[in-house]
Length: 196
Length: 427
Image (cartoon, rainbow over all chains, first blue to last red; front, side, top):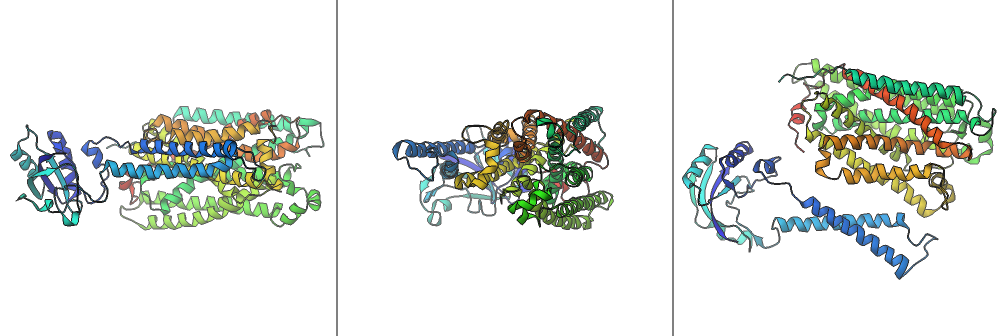
């Protein structure tokens, strides 16, 4: 990934954040991401994010589990090692269903957790820049990416009008690196803080 | 915003409910003429004609019990959401309130049917335990006779239905009084919470346990299943939610319920989806354990429905499997996507399918046992059509009663403390 330049606006309330996000999109600025202390209903919609495909992935994992369980058990009990259990048929579908169900749930659950971690780049020792030490703690942080067409002063003024409690420029790494948050030094590097 | 909050019955709805009730009444008259409901049954005629009374009462019991439980499920919905202090259903809560008003009519009708069969009809192919002579030689029924006897049956049924009517009446009174009270008045809210809690306990002791034993499971009195009451409840409950969905979508189409949007539809859709799966879970748990342990006295129930050794039991094998397809596979696959739960057409279609599916489920709970005794000559398809006709009458009655109750109150309980939460609801 690469180092990019951002203008970061920090808000202390959901009520000021929401209109700010909407107006930012209306003004045509490019929102990098919004960091919040808690999940906010409807924020994804306001940011214009598309619906996640995680559930489609979940369905595919579930179907994988179903077919694995069904094919394996039918193969074992009809071809590989047929056993007579209590006079039941060799292909006792009702008896298979609990196991099929469990493997379906297991595959869907584990697959979705791993996919979620991959999509969000969450893993032990994977570190990312969160733009502000208090981001996701008690501050709502919205970085706007500075492109060739962006007028930095204009964006700062925009943030201040929108009710930001803190506005600053920052160059940040957008990708992840190996490290530990409690030993991070990068977060404390040069920051130009303008208090509104 | 000018709210269209007072419901007026459109002519079309009135016409449909009258037409459906007409079909029901016509079927009933034909039944009385051709099936001799008050004869002793095997005394007159031969073959299929001889068991007319059994067929007549079976169709009445099937529809009477099914529609009463579906309508009562609406009040269960209100009570459960009220007790959970859930805000989201408030913008359409007057709809289940109106549907549950049907208990006041369908309850007495069901009681008349059930008690009429137990006390007046001379037939005893549905409830063997009411045949005193037979019970004397039947060890199992003799053991159960402290519980399975007409007097206990009557007391339990009347008490249960009476209690539901009383709880529903008190709740509705509070809900209407709240509309006229000052804004910020909380006493109605807390009182309705108490009523909801008491009703849920009552419902748990009736529909979730004892009533299905008496009303339905005692048809196959030698057989028993500990899952049965939950299974019956799940069936009526998911059908009840679908009925709420149908009325909400209907009112929305007519331009009422302005505050209801996809978010609310989505949540009712989730209930339909989740409880279809819940029904299947109970259905399967009951079936699989009996199938696996393979005890003759337990499998008898499923042999009547599924057939044995490749020989189907009339139309019941088909109904049994169709049941699983339209009550489990269809809701599972069609309602799984978020988009389909928010699509008015899809949820309406699924609600109709689910209601019909669970009507069918009740049909196959009640009829195979008695019909089996009537032998091969008993044409079960003609009985199915008869039951369908009676069912149409009950459906018309439900539509008529709901529409009537909807006109009696504004569609938004505007003084309820959680109503704003419902309006801004986000799924």
